[in-house]
Length: 211
Length: 102
Image 1 (cartoon, rainbow over the protein chains, first blue to last red):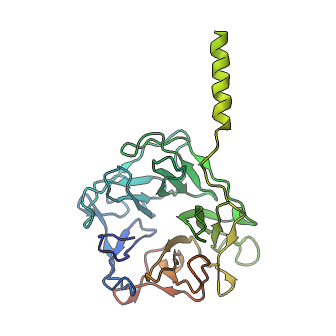
Image 2 (tube, rainbow over the protein chains, first blue to last red):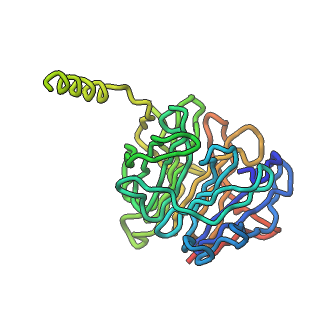
């Protein structure tokens, strides 16, 4: 993620306290070096549990342009809600408004949501993928426009693998993992160990290659 | 009325037979590092694919609950066939990142 459009990769990270931390790359492209973390603010206050009306504990992060103005907005999945922080800054200096909630379609969003902006059905309009508490990734089709998205009821993606449904809290990333031109999906999870003394712990990363 | 009903049925049937642009997936596999499945004791893993060191190969960054740490797996394979060995915990300001986790 390039926070300030300087061509170098930066890092943003969420945590269980609901904080959003920015680590700027003060090194080079080839040898990234991260500066000490700085809290990300919205409406002039660092985002943390209770800082804003919608800010809760936990923070699963994603940045993507949801309003069609070319600026990366910030999605923060808190414990029970998905908070949307619109970028009201500019490309090299993101600044965020107070959080709002995206209008949820019938069926709502999952608890502990993690959103991901992508044109999933290749219709030229960005959609939302969303992981959550359960072992699944949901697809919310945009039936509005790129500047005024409107989400259809979720479809659960068909993702299968031996033991994949054992782990919970699915968190997805989209990539062309093997450079075959097809969309692939990576999913991190929790509670994946189902036997033995450490049952109930564990976490894997699943790779689902596109057919 | 009868004509309308037929038209509606045809529309529904056509709608159902539209080819889907949605991606379909092969059976999933667990990613490995050092030839062993990546398995973090207190997981809650959050993967992020990115070419971290701009060498033209995708790397893997993984957030974990344990210690609130962030793993960096540099790609020791190729861009089309990523492979991973050891990871390092990402540092910031000279110290390992350790975010609140509890």
